[in-house]
Length: 475
Image 1 (cartoon, rainbow, N blue to C red):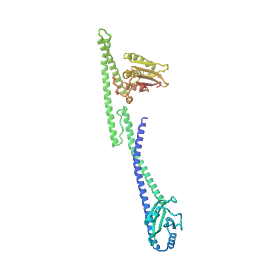
Image 2: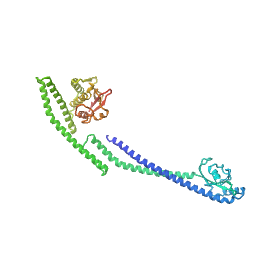
Image 3: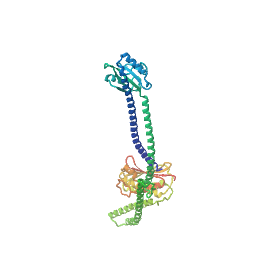
Image 4: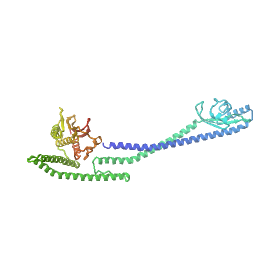
């Protein structure tokens, strides 16, 4: 069905529309998700860091009164404080000496290995509270640690008070937040897809109908109208195409009527010229120059008569008045008679017409022999006019179980590839300099189509053009 190609185009437009829309929404949505996640992560980490800094500072200030005690008394107070630490389930409190060894921990007197993170050495070195956030080198767990230096009464930094906690729960919360944000983005994308699909469908469905009708108009079905359903830009497009269709149809009718009237008017004087030229040629008393001139008149009159007949056939096709007189016919005999008759005419111009004979049985078929003979003559005439410089034409006929196939090949320069799809169109002559109306092949194509067949033009290997006529054996 002819509507398949527009469907492919519509799918392409829909896909392009959705991809462009969704890609923008995706990019903006991902930026928002990343921004929200980063903001909340920064907020959580900052809040946790502030809390732990506050704890470290206040605890250090609390222990400053013990700094004047002996080392033994000081460490005993550290152990006692660590053992009574209330938040030991979520935060570990450590007391670390200047050598980096744990001397007391809320998890036990010497819980675990002594830590080696950078906050400890920095606090000992700078005398300022230091923060570490990252992976614990000993366990691989993500942690946050805050170390506050503890200064003895003589100014000596005797160790650090360190708070450390796992970031696992915070990271999980941030991940959950990111997933929630992504889920919201997916919901938004779904809504965008639905709305975009509905919107583009509201555009493409009427456009597909317009495309289908416009293709019919471009293929020659002038005068058809597209139903107007929308009072918007699409409606304006429909109005413009409908007006164009009406105008083309009117112009086509005027052209056809003019050609038909002119062709009929030309037949009478052409018939008279042909008759009188034949009468003059059959008489005597003319010198050679005069006889040559009358022959030229007679030949050109015949050519003009053929053009007029083509124009009349063209107007019949345009009006739908062309009919076929079908009968059972020996198509091979008709083709051979045409070839041999036209071959003698071509020989006068120095062109050899080779008929490639074969022993195949070509069955009789139901056809209009007069019209098919017209097709064969026209193709041979075109081969002589457009490929005559090759001085040779080949013609053949055979049967392939379903179709009678006639092939006529010239050895001229061929047809430019970009013109091959156009040469069967009415009045198209392309780059050819040969004389003619440009409607002969259009008439031939219509006659072959009326027989249920196909007329194919293609360039031959080695130069020249091949014209193939395929007529079904059974109709």
